[in-house]
Image (cartoon, rainbow, N blue to C red):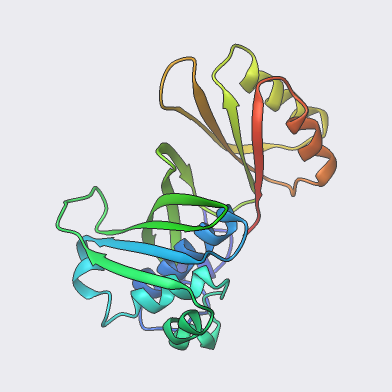
Length: 220
């Protein structure tokens, strides 16, 4: 494995006690908020495996909610996240699931407000690193480690090539790319992690392509 910095090995600066159960959980929550694009009014949080067994003792619950409030891993307000969320009127529920998942540190987060909802599944893989493995029913692999865009599109010939051509035109290198679809010929999702930041000009050019429904930018 290639490490970008010493923090990839020892974990991030964080509120403890655990890089996987606390820092990783905060990042999953913060990624959910980032993908939702705003602070949610309610959240339903389900824990699986080790998360379900130890979330209260390891602060996984406050960490996820802290992430939903846009707190970084080192933000001391994480400790009071449940109270701060309640003050904002955010309704939160937790459930401990018995279903066996592929990774022991798994959380399913469903958030929303009067304008929409979002559901994702995230795993904390150690050292504060995470992967989002499901988004609104689409399978994907999003680490949040690099700049990324999520492109919702019609499952049509040439859609993927057209997006890749725009990135190549602007000399943006693709580090990792996944494509997922629920049904042949219907809606699909491109997850593209890149080496450089993507500015608004590139985003607008991709949005203008045929068969593109929505483009979301993710920057950790």
